[in-house]
Length: 140
Image 1: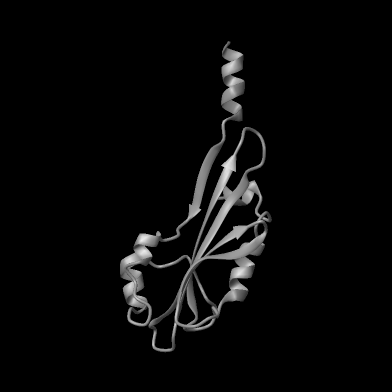
Image 2 (image 1 turned 180 degrees about the vertical axis):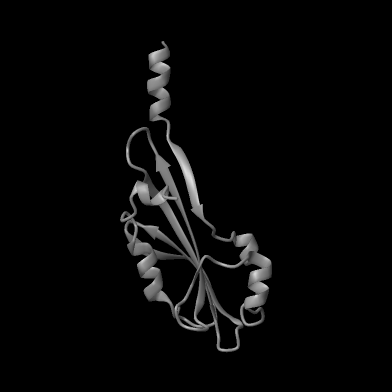
């Protein structure tokens, strides 16, 4: 009986979340065309990633990993919120992206322009899916 319980416990998935992505409720507090970088930092916090070009955008990245027993962890979800700013530091676009069937998809979009400036960075973020090993997740 005890052996069966131990075996069952080893098959139970454990989930871990990494990173930070603001909720839709938090993003609703921001107004495109009015709020600035300082407003974003105050209302939703600073991101862990920013665009390489001055004035480009802020990127919030979050992923969910599933661990089952002795198997390697598997990333089951990744979301990116991209907030881009105009030259004056005012919000130009707010977009949420996810990964579905290996393709980057826009989950929500509040934009003043039809295209996001940092699409190359988004492809890099989502392109690393599956390239992270367990020892990289838990290194000190």
